[in-house]
Picture 1 (cartoon, helix red, strand yellow):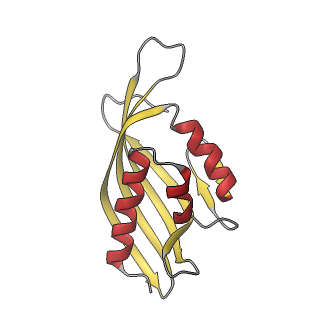
Picture 2: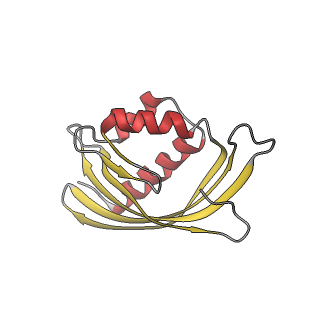
Length: 141
């Protein structure tokens, strides 16, 4: 069964893995495959293959990332949950041939759909960035 505590811990671990750009083998088990849908400001991706392509691209652009979870509000229904997440995202980004990197800082308002996998572990089946609110002085995507 999904619990608020398990969801909060999952989200904390998820963002830590994104911050340090872990190998795909550590991230993919946290995601559903066939029904996975992830909606980002720049694209929508599906399944593990879509996530891998997106992740490999963004880790070559963004670095020095820090995700700070500000809000986790799950609505749990047995083995599924809809979760409102607000995370502050900071990252340096470099787009060649620019001579310098730039810093982005924004609050990402998200809606996640989570469920339990066959082993009883939480996974993400849907991940939507509903809004991105930039902090003053931040560059924009």
